[in-house]
Structure formats: structure tokens, C-alpha cells
Image 1 (cartoon, one colour):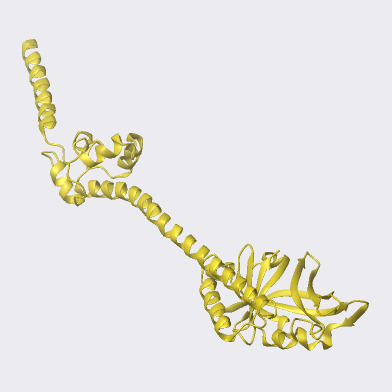
Image 2 (cartoon, one colour):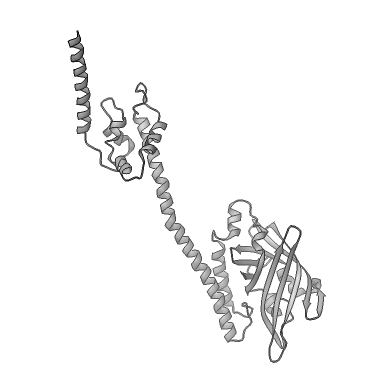
Length: 339
């Protein structure tokens, strides 16, 4: 009987060797992008199951492992998550389990592909935005340069209709950009831009305000022997204070005297429904208090020239550029650059 046992063991060993030889002889599946069900049918053993040995014949999977795109540990985790075929001691998967495994491996690489494909798109968006912003700043620079040569007022106060339309067109494009914090706030559902974004000192680059054009500046004091020489706005905000201060330069010509006009007041940011879009809009409301020039200090409540600045929509803001539109006349623009 001992001879019989030895013979049985020898036969079992031979059978195992035959299986190993048979598996080694089976070809590696080198085709890529096969549907999981087709791939399973090509890999499955005589019991129509796939185990560790069968996975070794999946050429694309072995390439991923050898190239370092997928580690053996990562594969083991994915295999461990898939339900195993009944009665196989957790060693084999049936067609359904294999298809889930193949999908899980695909998902890993789809995420990577999506990120990689997003990068060029994001770079293109970054480039488009930079070009738009450069285009706007160069356009405003050209308007001022031509204005200087022709003796026109600064900040586009004397620019022609064609120039105004071009600025309006570029502004309309730049306002739609995702870098616009107004758009970002709207997309997150809040709609309100933090008032902290506005704090600091800003210089007026351009205005199409008809009131400012008529008054040749903000205060209306320039004219005759003086001319408008630029405008800055300082926005201060603390827990208790919300102060705003405009500093207008009035430049002497033909012997006229140069001086500064300071306009002080309070400001607040509020969210209101826009009359034009019906959507929430960020409104900057300013209540002027005093106008100071030379030795004079006047109450600002009767200065009609300040009206256009008192209620404006914030339509664009980033780190160093801010665009405000008229609350009732949305074609009226005020473009500010951070000092």
C-alpha cells in the first residue's frame, strides 16, 4: 500500500507540473483596449475563471507593472476588493468579477489622463486671460498716449466713441473670465465678493462717465487755468471703520496753480438684485462727507459732480485690476489699477 501512495503522489506532482507547463505554453494576450468580457474569455482557464496565473498572461497589465505605472501592491488591493467566485477559496474571479477589476484599473488611469488633458486646456485659458488683460491695459495706455499728444484729458475723459466701444468690448470679454473673483463668487453660489478684496489704494486708469467728462474730473474744480491730473482712491476697512478717500490732482497750466482735492466719506459693499440681469450683484455704495482743497473744507452732500461714484456695480476684480460699472447706466465704466 505504501507503494500505491508513492505512485499517487508522483501522479499528483506530474499533474501539477502538466498544468504549469500548459499555463506557460498559453500565449500572453498582447492586444490592447480589448473589451473586458473579450479579454476574460481569452484569459480564463478550463473552469472559466481567472486567477493569479491567468493575470500573468494579461500583457497590458504586466506592462503597467513593469513600467511602474501600477505597483503589484496596488493591483493586490484592487483584486482584494473584487468579489471572488464561489468555492474557490478567494483565489479566482468569474467574468463579472474580472470586468469589475478591469474597470477599476481603467478608472485609475482615466483620472490621470483627465488631469493630463486638463493641463494644456488650463494653460491655454491662462494664456488667453493674460492676452486679454494685456490687450486692455495696452489699449488704455494708447488712449492716454494719444490723448497726451492731442492735449486731451487723462483717463479717457476725452476719448472718442470708437475708443469707448473698443474698451467696452474688451471689458465684456475679461469680465467673463474665471479669474474674475466676481464670477468665482457667483459660481460658488454665494454671489458676494469679500469686501477685503477692495481694500488698498487704487489709481483710476479710465472712465467713460459722462458726468466726469462734463466736469473734467471728479470734483468739477479743474478747468480754466487748471486741468484734471489723475485720481486715486484709498479704501480702508476694519472691524469698525469703512472709510474711503479720493485724491484728485488738479494741475496748473499757463501759470495756474497745482493742488490736490481730497474727498472723504464712508463706503459699504452690499448684494442687490441687478435691474438688468435679475441676478445678485455686488454694489459699492459711497456716502461722501467732505471735500477739502487748499484751506477750504466743504460738506460733500451738495456736490453733484460726485454722484456717479456713489453707487457702482463691481463687475470685475483680481489681484491688481478692478472694474466698476454704473448702477443704472451699465455702459459707464470705471477701471482701477492697484497702486
